[in-house]
Image (cartoon, rainbow, N blue to C red; front, top):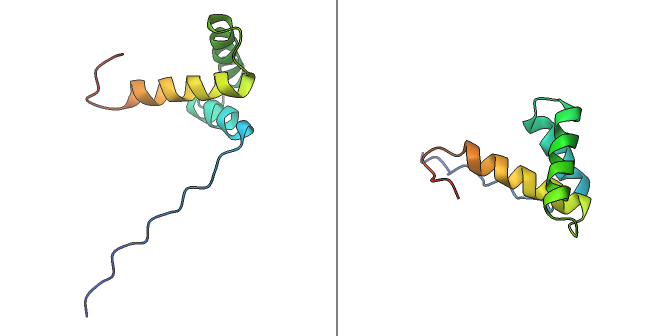
Length: 72
């Protein structure tokens, strides 16, 4: 009997707090480091919201970790 292809996981919409939690995870649980990165992003872009800053940092870290990509 033929096997079915695995089901794709549905992505759920993320709440703003999810990005801060994701950032802490990417910082290996170091909340102080995650806070420092958020504050650094807010200094770079003062009009940005805190959730927006967390999203920007998470996006930057993921981009830097991706193999084979050129730096921006």
